[in-house]
Length: 167
Image 1: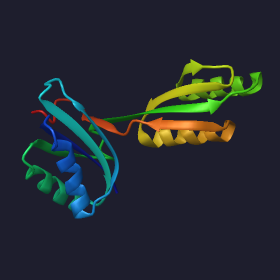
Image 2 (image 1 turned 90 degrees about the vertical axis):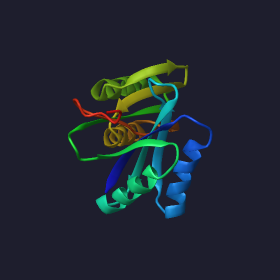
Image 3 (image 1 turned 180 degrees about the vertical axis):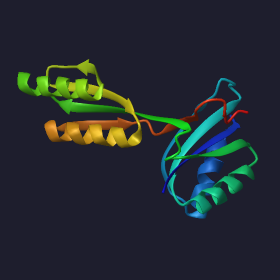
Image 4 (image 1 turned 45 degrees about the vertical axis):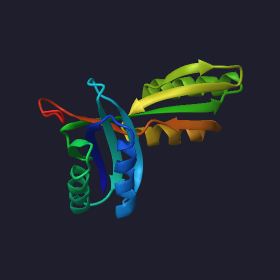
């Protein structure tokens, strides 16, 4: 099962390395990871996407709590309606000819994606949505044109309503 783990930790040298090392030592795979400072520059937030059942995630979160720089850990269940999850995709595509350009513009309109850069032969598209929707969009684009390059940000997630990792 797909699991999102959110971690608040002190923004110090080596803190991220210790978190990643814990996953490696325990044999857990990190599907993707994002890290950035929070509104408090001395605290960073790391969001990790991993595969595992609830027991494995509980084990991971308990081990993460033991790390020196970790302030708080929370599991954001993927199918839980109490979170907002997004990922950003940039995809560079070959767009030669009016017909191809028109098809890409129509596809972007359907998915509510944006064309953020245009050259005579290439478009760069930007799409923000859930990971599964990003996969759908990328598949649709790949069926229409040649994909030159893709860049994905990784998952970011936050609790809905009053619940907060900070509280």
